[in-house]
Image (cartoon, rainbow, N blue to C red; front, side, top):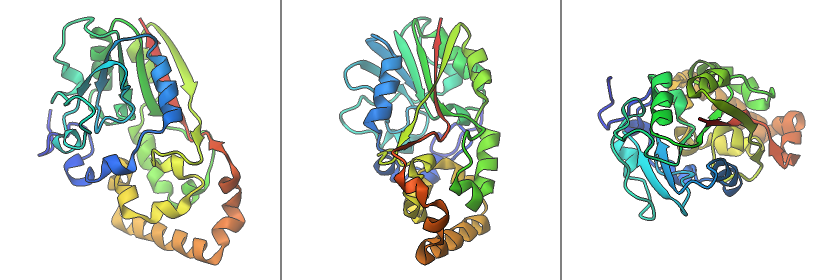
Length: 257
């Protein structure tokens, strides 16, 4: 399997786009609470594709796996160092962990079924996968400005039933609503804060933008900037600023053996 120079093993080069990721993608406590609840009473937890450690519970014994050196370097001192390994070859014995988790990472795995099978192999209890439905459940303003971004994501995000089939056993798919003041600034979390998507650092913390041509990004920036300045955005889409939460397609897929 080919890896980028910094070790990134998926389709995105975090050696190029990962700078400052941990500052932008701060885990939201409301999303974290749902994620952690899915782990049940597990004491030992495996986090695959752990990145900078978002959503790792602090009250459990967590083993993190992350192939990107740039992302491992951003893990705070309060978390344990991550193991340099990939999802499809987890260096652990069968049934090592009480539970396992993966946070918005499975769309980057080159061998999804093998990776999820590995998680199932090393896990005695629940496997919790935080991901996005490749089909947005709501047509919202960002789709109008840059449909190319959603075309990219539709080709990257695996179908929920494919994830469920790979996990096997009993699988529950849960809707995770995104709060308007979400501290984890992924694209859908900015449904009520369009100005933030003008920030290159914010966009860089979303891997999908790295697959959008520069001219498309510039077209988006020009259009959104103009519409915010003129008031056209608020006239057409201002209702999004009043929503306390939003269904942006974030889903928690929980599999039991």
